[in-house]
Image (cartoon, rainbow, N blue to C red; front, side, top):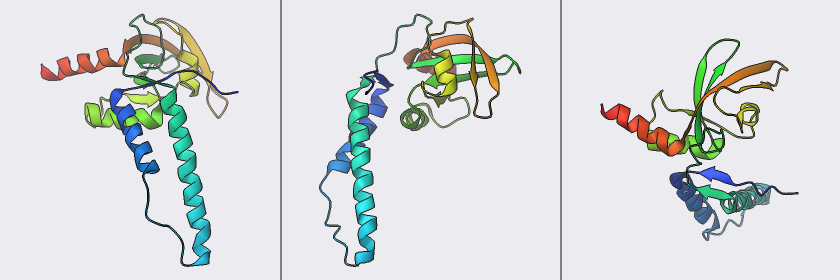
Length: 172
């Protein structure tokens, strides 16, 4: 069974994935190996490219591009979330999105500094725990070593609003 759940992407990430797909589908020079020992490497490369093409096509077919989720306080993909780790009191702000796509997009869009939010996948333990939560809600999840981590959702802001707020702060 395949999931039809939409995947939230910024327009920049969508463009980058489209360009990657086009590059993978572009005709290539012949890769006929001269040495029979290199045949395995060529076949492995072709299989890897074919797998990435399938992955990109599936991802792009499910993409919800650039539309911020509603600013209704519900944690969902496309939102920048702030949580407090209840055991330590530490706070963390992150984008709930597709990590392998969005992190490089954030680095390019916001600049590569330490104030940029990390990106956590909605399918990560923390992402699954907070999805659907509202500010003030307490959630918990297990980490690989079996420890239970408890968090409180403090704030939710659509990604576009977060970018605007950050730009306003930076211009002051």
